[in-house]
Length: 384
Image (cartoon, rainbow, N blue to C red; front, top):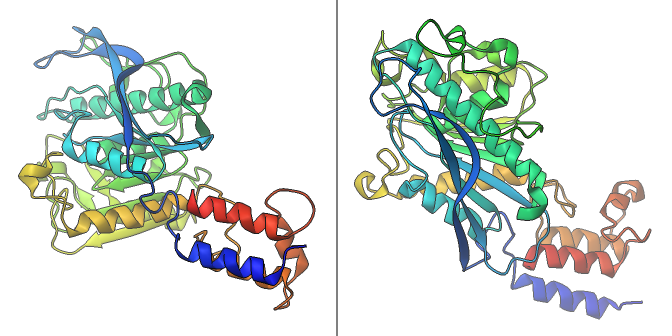
């Protein structure tokens, strides 16, 4: 039997190491694997009048992961860049930095390439551009679930984090169903039918929904896409002076004719709340589009990262942590840290009275007994 003195020493040790994986930066070195092909799909030339003149392209992703990571079944965050479906790339500065920030916290981070092609003077073209990108979002999630063992990732913990147009992808993918396809996606005499949501990129058959979404300055084209049974949690961040994507509702770029009407973070949060779907909303007063210090993904031009960058990261990683289903959060405050150790020690040493039934779920090694071995496992979770 371990003594009280031994347990006390354990508490002293963890008092010097309270960083929590997935919340704090615990890794220094990052390994990057660029240009992995996750799909192939018909793309448009840069300039086009009609959409019949396509050519097939490979769709690539860059993977960022912590060096010398021994954890199995790691969670994933897919990052999708801004650019109004007209420009942008997976090498955008904000996407690269977000991937590095995530990898240092222990995530496998992926910056995805998706198809571009938009006639900004056409609402019809705008709907089709968004839909093609949704298909690519579906393809990359299905690819990762197909090859989860090769990448050492958990297929049930795939998150989607988008900026502007990238958020459009994550939000629509989470809630749109096949029966809700916009009429424009079926084409006309000049443009082809774009096919089903899962019909491009690859032929893997898996659930295409992310586990949760981080939406920075994003929107959706129809509130009715969200149904009560589509339980995908979302954290929203938006500036009230955003003239590119309205935080409540309106036309992108304030162009009242040429692009589809959209519903921003405020309206989407209200809809999710109506259906008791978990969501988190931050509206920053008087702040513009990409207010964490980017201009179309470029941090050098946008003056970032600024103070909002750190705030958004902190809130986002905390939000995602809630959906990692990590054992050991004994006091149920959303974190696994020294406070959980204190509660468990008090229970084991019978310093305080607790309900035995509530504590049996924290038998970390499933040996039927709560003891110092379970404490050690929680310490490993906190400090590795």
